Image 1 (cartoon, helix red, strand yellow):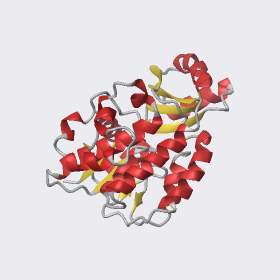
Image 2 (spheres, helix red, strand yellow):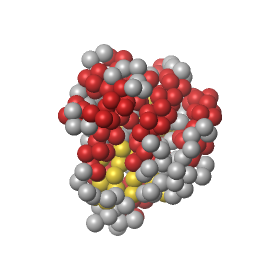
Image 3 (cartoon, rainbow, N blue to C red):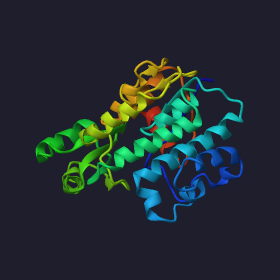
Image 4 (cartoon, rainbow, N blue to C red):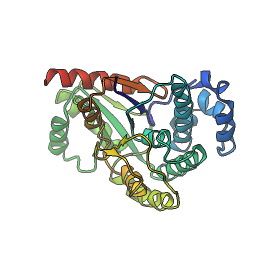
Length: 287
C-alpha cells in the first residue's frame, strides 16, 4: 500500500485544536513554549480572536500542532512513501522529512508569520463550484487586475487573494457566473500573491542562514507539484512559495499517478481529506 502523509496550513486552525495531544507529548510542547510568545495551550484554546486570525500566532500554532499530530502518526509504525503540505503545511512536511529539527522549524515559522503579517489590508476569497478557467474569465470581465489566484485546491475549489474590497466586489459576479459559494476566509493577508513579494524576499534571506538537510522522504512541493529529493535551492523555493499559487490539485494528481490511494492528514480539521476524496473521484471520472 502506497501512503502519503499531508499537513494542513493556515485556515485549518480551530478552537481546541490539538488539545488531546498536549499531555501526550509534553517535551515537544515545552520546547515550543520556550520559543513562543504565547503558550501552546493558549494557541490551542484560541479564546482570543487574535489567536485564531492573526498570522503571527496562527502560523507557529499550526506548525506545533501539526508536529504533535505527526508524533502520533509515527507511533502507528506506518512509513509514508510521499509527503506534502498545503502552504504553511509544506514546512511541516519538510520537518517530517528531516530537513531541519523542531526548534529550527518553529523559528522559521515565527519569522514567516511575522513577515507575512506586515503585509496587511489584504484577504482571501474561497470560490466553490466554479473551475479555474471560468474564474479567470470573470476576473477579466470585471477588470479585477488587482486580484490573484492563490490556491488551486481542486477542480471546483479555488482561492483568490487581493485587497478585501476587491474580493467583496467579486462575490456577486462569481455567483452569477455559477459559483456555489464565495466565502471570505478568516485571514488578514493576501497570501500566495504579488502582495507577498517583499515578505518573500526577506524570508528567503532568513532561510539562507538555515542549514537544510536532504529530505529522507520525497516532499511534493506547492509551486510545481513535483517531488523534492535534495536540499538544493530550498531557501529560494520556500521564499517564492509565499508569492506563488498553491497547486494542491496538481499535487493530488501527482500522488494518484504514483499509486497513492491512502492519505493521512497530520493536523487539525479534515479539509485535506475532503480535497483528496474529490481528487480521487475526479481521477476515476477521467480514466
